[in-house]
Image (cartoon, rainbow, N blue to C red; front, side, top):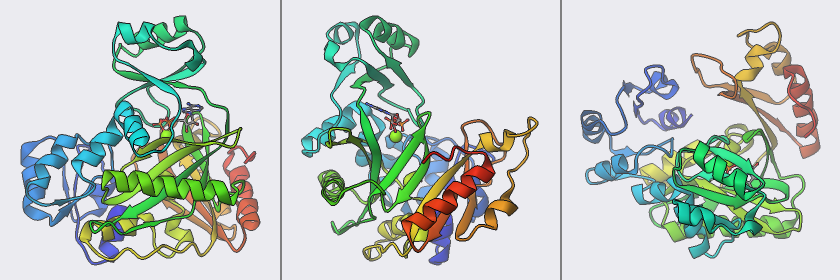
Length: 366
Ligand code: ADP
Ligand code: MG
């Protein structure tokens, strides 16, 4: 989607991706099939590209650092490094004056036994490499905590207090090298099994004070990082009304995919603009939007599969925009694409989204 946005602005793209079947590589002018730290691959990128970005936060920060000596790189390796480690990320939030969930860092036996029982029940999360709920275990007691840490091979972890959520929100900002910053409206996100399922914009349940707090906090976090590019900040809105930051992603984010059809500039175009040093106008939402994630599970609905869902029935609904990523195999829990629904009013977009979900065999309780 980034490559498409860059191409629309007349740029050519080279994608470095170790996967031979790379959706981005397939639409780019060139695909370098190499590991993220492959020196030959990185040298090719540095030779042929004017500017370099990442679409995946687990690209080793070292790769970006190496390239930054030769070319424009955004976001910077230092920013990506903060997002790659939950413990460092949380320390950054606190330093930026934005509250996050009560937590403890666990890297050794002493820290494990010193954990404040008030953090239980909690979620033990690996500090690095987690996504879509992977590398997370819910624990209720200190015994379960010890067992879970063992199960995670005693890698550095963060134990977070399990918080009573009213809803999950996210805010996407785009920040230029000159410090200019713009944001999309607050997004309300529903997760199922730790994976984003539905995003609605405008956020249906969010009062204006919470909306303002979320936008201000997101901008504060980006400014404190001196961030360049698109950054997504995810929040927990708690049942007692408080807003705490959950985590951030140094790239366009799944919760911003609605911007491809519901806003006058998409998150991907803003990423291209930030990277190319082009102006960043404030994006304007022109349609109420709902995004439904399409996981590989949908290909296995009837008799085993894999069979594609009934796209013709979904696309017969008004304001539906289907985006499929061209991944080779449908697998359970794998993000295969998303469906954007746009309408004049949030109620209309919601109603069509519920109809589409019913056709697809997705839960309709959102
Ligand atoms: P990931 O990197 O996998 O997205 P997250 O930390 O965002 O990891 O956790 C995934 C989901 O699990 C969240 O979106 C939320 O629904 C739930 N979750 C995570 N941490 C907490 C918490 N401390 N309290 C309540 N729910 C949580
Ligand atoms: Mg998350």
